[in-house]
Picture 1 (cartoon, rainbow over the protein chains, first blue to last red):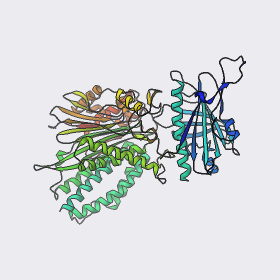
Picture 2: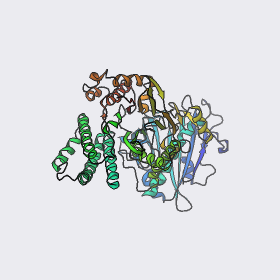
Picture 3: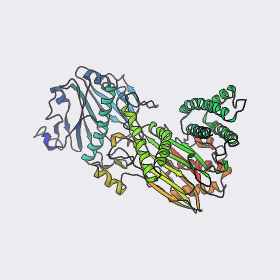
Picture 4: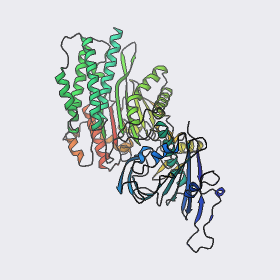
Length: 203
Length: 413
């Protein structure tokens, strides 16, 4: 039986996105989207899952409940140097700049066979040990996900478990629709979070 | 006597399985398999002595140790090792046949060849299984055997394909003996194979032990194209985008249909199940997987199913040979071209060319980890044909693993 997984799409009208600055003179509108709207989450979680979405971009979030305390889950999620401990689809990962513990560090990820990607170069953007927030952006590699940025937060649930929220923002690749892009990335993220739940419970 | 007969059958099957396993593992894993093979041979030796009543052991410990060292040498000498193993099997067969009447005539053995090559990809995720006489059927006139061969092209990791190689033929035999309907028994055996693979994930202790050390197995899968040869029929069951092609009277006949997500009926099935096919470097289920059916891949169910499509073809005098291969071959070589290449080999027209240091020649086109001659009693011409097909695929820039099985179906040879 799969753990419950919820999806919040940035494209849904129910999210109530609005123009960031109505009178701004920038090219095209920037929409501020809060992907945890309607959920009871700590303020810092809501802030981290609010994205400024430009034209030809899309964003989404996946929520995973895990029956384990946040510290146990965080021990796996925080490993920027070793995402293989819970992420599928990674054949090999090595830190290519820094030590994987500081903002700005880079890792090179090689992807397993069968997927439409070969490699990904990723930069650590946030590593908040106190509030359990990790974020990375994709800055290179052989794949079609340009300007991808991901944020993963952990917070305690009411029943002594953990609520994991992972949201992302990414360009819609040429030739694909926003809906297709969300469907593809959500599948990958959902699979990884379900694996995280199994890996945590297996420890 | 019945017990002895059964024991002999088990011995032969195990010997076959031992030999086949070596052919399809990487160098490092081959060493592990060699260790297992050595233990298995010791067990077989004891049984052999019991059956034959000979006083002297067939192998002394020194021989075993030397053989083990030889088996750990580089791929260049793999053919020698396998040929020697094949000789051992012949010796066992000849000795056994003098005491057990029910054993098959050695001439009735199918002629086949196997070749697998890693290609440009760094890891080998294909697996091949050939099991002559994997199922035995007694009629009032003679004892005949069914022969099994399968090609499994793994993705995400190799262990689903390896598990198929180890288990699927056993499941097929069990299901066919339970109900002699090929469509149903194949469907049930593939379903059971898929359930065994998915169960790897449910068992908390079964963390992936493969080289990749995956966190779990939810996103690992494999194709499976399987053929059972009986005296009267050719049965093919396919799940995924590997393929079986029959050459009859010089013409290519596809015995399987590739499960691509944009095949109209597969597209309809996926959409009816609530999934979608997204064009992302080609048509893919949810933009992720480039095939619509596979063993494993639990995270994509119910869109990616493991139900095989089964064809049953009556054998005919004009049957030349059968080719089973992964899409690393079929993506760059047409059915017709593959048949032409194999026909040339089986007629002996290119023996001189192929047999001149094929392993060394392969190196130039990135053919690391070449494995040839997988299985006992491989036929030289079939082996050369399968090897030539892998070379052709690499020459045509195939970027995938390539695995090929060629079975000679001619009756007068």
